[in-house]
Figure 1 (cartoon, rainbow, N blue to C red):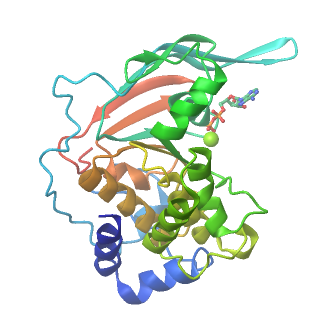
Figure 2 (cartoon, helix red, strand yellow; figure 1 turned 135 degrees about the vertical axis):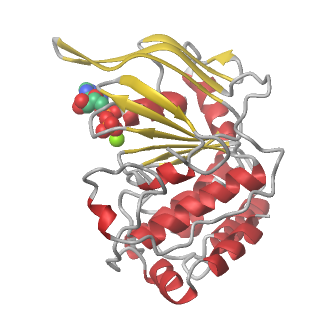
Length: 305
Ligand SMILES: Nc1ncnc2c1ncn2[C@@H]1O[C@H](COP(=O)(O)OP(=O)(O)O)[C@@H](O)[C@H]1O
Ligand SMILES: [Mg+2]
């Protein structure tokens, strides 16, 4: 199924320009694409450039919708506060966040730098616990769990795509992708097979032996994505996934995540200051100064803000 998604995307994208940019990667300086139909991007400089990719897409999955359908939320934050202690000074990075995330959603948390996005992502991903309030995953309160239990839940449920990729510099591409499977005590030959398959999916089958430092930015991002999919988690969390990439590579990544949601029912959560991912969102959560300003629901899968 993943390979099918990757193939569809490869042919959907302009083979000459896009694959070059995917292979050669982040060094190519393409103009950024627009930020989606109807989005009032005001003084967004990207308005100048026409979107080069045809974003029309068909939804062949009626079953995977972002509707709640009477289901309990997958992740639920109730009056969540995160207070960082810096010596004598306390800083509230999140101030009373209430947020429910449902299976099969594509949620974009949008806000300026310093608004609390990464802090929120760490809580949504059970990498951190709140100073106050509760975080529950599958209706289980994780706020007061022991780290060992948290780590186990994280390992099975959540794939992370970090802003700085967080690849292990001393491990090559194949080893980086295999690592989460080793943590889950997957049998080594099966782990290797899965890692090879995922690297093939993201178009890096010829880079198994490269260290992260021997890859371009876009290639590193794709290793990070392959790694995030290693244990086939139901939730993918990405912090600024398009931040360090040229627009073509960024589009490929977003399309890929979108297809994973549509075809495999994955729940995608992106935190970003960039408007580009908004067009894929089923909901946009606007965050500012540690508070949710507003939440925009998007009917269907296409953003019509
Ligand atoms: N470990 C920390 N200690 C103290 N302050 C922090 C820490 N992490 C983040 N902050 C502060 O919390 C605020 C939110 O940070 P962050 O969640 O990283 O924002 P964003 O990802 O939206 O840029 C910022 O003002 C930042 O300086
Ligand atoms: Mg951040």
